[in-house]
Image 1 (cartoon, rainbow, N blue to C red):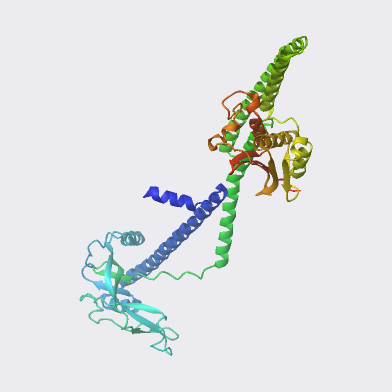
Image 2 (cartoon, one colour; image 1 turned 90 degrees about the vertical axis):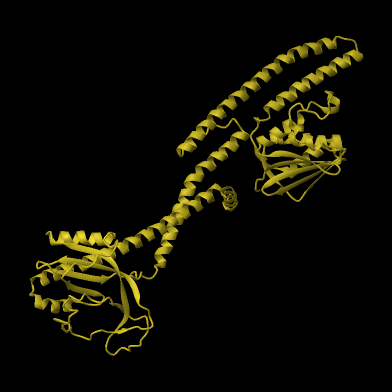
Length: 509
C-alpha cells in the first residue's frame, strides 16, 4: 500500500526544493497551531473542572462544619436552605452505597484526597462517580413567558429518590429558602425533552455523631461557550506562519542555489577561483569537497595542456628538420608526398592542441550579435557565398568568446557544405536561449552515431584517411568551446539532411 501512496504524493509535491520547504514548514506550523489550540482548550476544561470542584469542596466543608455543630432537629432545615438544583444534600445513618468501579474514577479520588487534606482529621470520607437521572427544566423570571424560546437558561433536577432515613425524605425541618431581594427564577419541566441519565459526583463525610452527610451534584456536560472567532488574530497568525516558512525556505535553499551556480561556473571555466566555504555545515562540507575536486581537475588540465604543449614543441623540431631535408630533394612526386605528410602532421598536432585548450578559452567572453557574426563569417568565405543562406528575424545577442564562437560556426557550416552541398542558417531566440540552426540536405548521420561523432578522433568512416573523414576533432572541439561558453551543440536527422543547433545563453540588448 505504501508503494502505491508514495508515488502519488511524489507527483503532488512541488518540484522545487524552495516550495517543498515552504509548504512543509507552513503545514507543520499550522499543525502545531492546531495542536496548541486543542491542548489549550483541553487545559481550559481541566481548569474549569478544577475550579468547580474547589468551589464545591469549599461549600461542602462549610456545610460540614455547620451541620456538625447543629442539633439534630435543625439539620434538615439548614440543608434545605443550601440545596439548589442540581445540588442535593442528604443526612444518612449509613454510608452511601458504593457503585462498582465508581471509586476508581480519577476525579473522585482527587476529590477525596483534597477533602481529607482540607478537613485535617481521620474521619471517613467517600467520593465516587455515579449515574443518575436528571429532569431538564427551564428557568424563567416572573413576567417572562413560560413557553418562551428554547435557547433560554436551562437547569437540571435530580430525580433519584432520597434515602428513607433522611430528614428531608420524611419532611422534617423543611422550610422555604430565605427570600432574596429581586425577582426569583421559576422552573418549569420540559416534557418534550426526555430524561437524561448522566454522571454525578457524590461526596460523603462521616459526622461526629456517626451520621453521614452526602453531597451529590450533577457534572456540567456542556462545555463553556468559546468567545467569537478572532479573525484578525488568525490573520496575523497565518501571516506570521507564512513569514517564518518563507524565511526557513530561503535559509535552506539559498546556499544550495549559490552552490549550484558555482558548480555550473566551474563546469564552464576551471580557471575560476575556489568557492567561499560558508553557510550551513552540510553546504560547507559539499563546498569543501567541490573545491578539492576543482583544484584537482585544474591541476590535471594544466598538466595535460603543458605536457601536450611540450610534446608539440618537441615535435616541431624534427618536422622542421624533415622539411629542410625535403627541400634539398629534386622536384618530383617524392618531394610532394613528403611535404604533404609533413603538412598533415602539423595540422594534426595543431588540432590536438586546440582540442585540449578548448575548455580554457584564451580570450574573455563578450556580448555579440549572432546575426551579424554569422553573416560576416559567410561573407568572409568566398566558397560559401553561393551555397549558404542566412535568415534572422532581428539581432540576437549572446555572450561568448569571439575566437571560440567563430571556430564553432566555421566548423559547423563547413561540415554542412562539405557533406550536404549547401546550408540554410537561421538565427533565432527561443526560451531565453540564442540559437543558430544549420540545415543541410546531405545524407545525415545514423541515429546511433549522433553522439559518438562528438568523441575525440572518432570518424564515421572506418578508415584513417584524412581526405575522407578529417582528424575527427572538429565537432569535439566545437562542443567543448560551446560548453565552455555555457551552451551546447545538438544534432538531429531530417528527411533528408541533418540539423546542427548551436545554443547559447541569450543576452538582452
